[in-house]
Length: 166
Image (cartoon, rainbow, N blue to C red; front, side, top):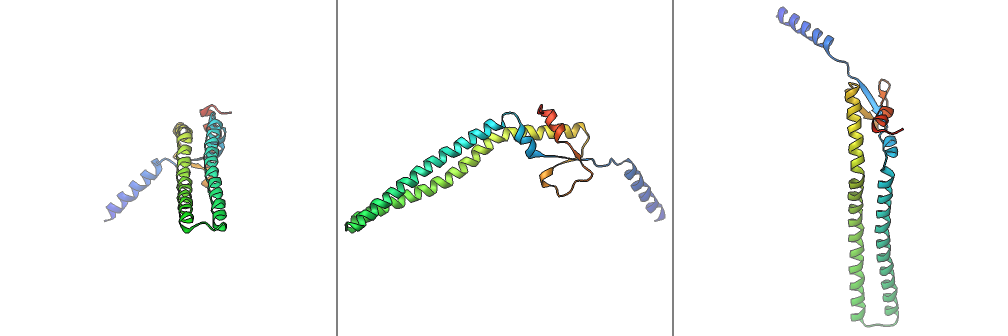
């Protein structure tokens, strides 16, 4: 039993001696994303798409308000119940279309954001992996998610340099 415990202790000591110390680094992901070439064009395209969706939605809301005002006039003029029912149905259909449009446009906007920004994110992650590999880093963290990073190298500038950003 003593021989086994001595062998285990020797094995653990030798593994500990040869084990590589973990090397930690961090980057400011958001800072790099802000200055990546072409990101401003992608963000402008995204904002333009968002404005287009908002304009269409606003037109639908304006149409609904007009129908609502026309309905109120009919109601005050003593229109028949059948006419009022037809107008109510029209308003309800338009209201449902507005709700569906709002839900679909939110999903479309998110899909557009992914489509426009994914290439930049992929390029940045590739650069981080290359810098980490070249520097023999075990872990690279995004600074925005860290509460503390005393023994960690800031690799933000190294990643920017790798990407050709000054």
